[in-house]
Image (cartoon, rainbow, N blue to C red; front, top):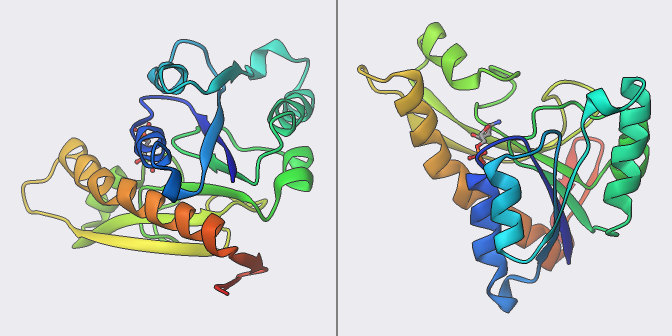
Length: 199
Ligand code: GRF
């Protein structure tokens, strides 16, 4: 199976996928890594692993809709079976969802539907929950609202900082991403509405 991974930053989740894909038995290859900004470590990780890389910056287009169309065309060139957002900090638009809806996954660092948005661990700490975690889900029009594929929980400790909690979440998030992307492509999972069908 062909994967395109979208990143905005460090790309440690991407790296976990790249490492898994090095084993042919995993059944997938990261054919390209895209970012919404140049110079991020995620792009370098993709290049080191032999994937194509590309950048689509919102500011390089007349408006958000034009960016969305350009990103869609760029990703479509690689004919991916699945597109994975791994720390990609942009919401895609209607053109992207028309093309990739149903096969665009995101990993989020909170137990949805709690704490959507870009500060999952910070918001979880502020609320005082005792369990945090990561959610793998299918992206829809909303912000972190799509059908949930998998979730993993980790404890929140009394002396946690945003950084220590984020790191504990990522330790659980990366293997979850690897396991479920692999199972989806090897086993041919389908998602209709909110229902995930495992053949
Ligand atoms: C992940 O925890 C993801 O859930 C969040 O940002 C982090 C990205 O980390 N949205 P990395 O770039 O994969 O290291």
